[in-house]
Image (cartoon, rainbow, N blue to C red; front, side):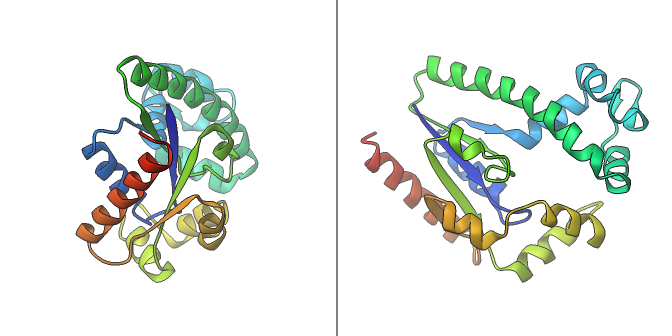
Length: 198
């Protein structure tokens, strides 16, 4: 089974590339979605209660309060990430085993911090989605609840786009239309299949 690590800095278009790959029949593990599911569960609340009790409300993790808490005390962020990432890794293993049992030859892991957390070692191929920084900032700031301070904090924790592109096996540029993005994504997928004789 070929494991593809899909990444890209905030607002680059990574999720859109993920949707295109799903449309091509590739199972996709969305790390962010799994984190949100964890935060909305009693298990997630129990997991984070000792670290950020102020962010746990009604047996769930309130993402707005969590964001405010780690902005005010960044030392808590690494502790939250450690326990959350361990839990998500378990979910990813279950997902992979299920996809393999259904006969899939390729899976995609959508992981925002793939290189930052050295998770490129857990995949066979890496894809980075990239776009000009001005477009990136415009897209990010248009999101609900995004502020300049929050965006700066997120970007400060991410490896610069240029470095991600240098490390990646494939780079998909997202600087024009959705149709062009789909064409580039399918071309990369075809190349991966040819390389791995699938």
